[in-house]
Image 1 (cartoon, one colour):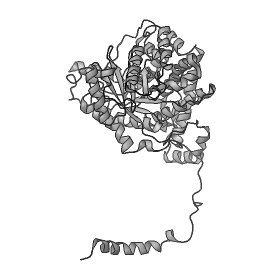
Image 2 (cartoon, rainbow, N blue to C red; image 1 turned 180 degrees about the horizontal axis):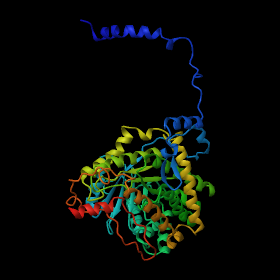
Image 3 (cartoon, rainbow, N blue to C red; image 1 turned 90 degrees about the horizontal axis):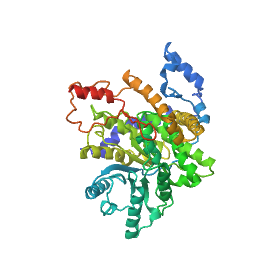
Length: 485
């Protein structure tokens, strides 16, 4: 009986001999001269011929504003592309959000998610929660911890410094942020935490603290996306938001700034959005003669998430997280698929966590230096976003800056106008959310499951300004279906 080795040898003998005699193995070299380069115009002419009378421009994808994706790009398009700072390969922090009402239970939750793959946490702290029991056995010197304190930043900072001193740690090596963004709070709630002067005094104490590696100037820009701003407007507002901090603290603000962004539904556009933010922030830095590398935390947005057929949300967050990782973010948080209608289950949180981990440890998405670089489509989208966002930024600066533009209502009107356009596209079925406005499961009942449905308030009036209201596209339809049950 033949061995496997002998059998394989006999099986492959004839084909190998045939290959060695073929023209592909001859001494002649391939020059590819038989494949002449085609210009962009020639490619477009070929496409138009194949369309048989169809309109080439009908193949364009319009993202809002002047941002358009062509069906084809060419090397001729590259010279105008924006310069994006190189992002080297690295492991991106996988962050999980934890709402802390009780220090003991919060501590268990932190240790649990760290043992299951997370490299950081975003802690939403209820007033009065003590950090010492919350951070017991948590090696804060090795992970990223963000503290969202709802106006108690000074107290959080004091407690954190006490813990660092007690453990003999170097405060300058602790990573994360004490997240207290007065501008976002003004935009979202219509008022300051305390007062404009007091809120910015608190920020000044944070950036002057020994916590030199913490990014305590948090630009919480996710509100703009979740309220319906287009990608270009979102970036322009984000720059204007951050520039308020630079206006107060000059070039020293750059090293303390972190951008908290939401990830949208359009895959290529979102890759370009995060690349554009890195490019734009570097451009702002140049104006202040400072090297500015944008530190970006990205979480999957809420605008396109649904209550009905909620498992589809997992598919949405998968592509969203991937676009952020390819776009070069520093931290990523995948929101659980059931965040729109209940307190997320352990299984939902586990799936969300593992989505980010699989992309890094199995798909190796972050193992490549700037994987989108050189893509004609993404480079052009990046450039277009930079140009349009810069226009929005300059327009807001001309109105006195972000705070003044919020007080005048300009920012609110800008977002509301774009949100209304997007909402109309959804209502007409031109924006599709599978399982909700396309291919819904008519037999599905969610009223018992939806214990805490995420619906926006119709009240936009605040004490100081009119609020920016985050609203999901499918809310009206879901409310109708839930009432009908």
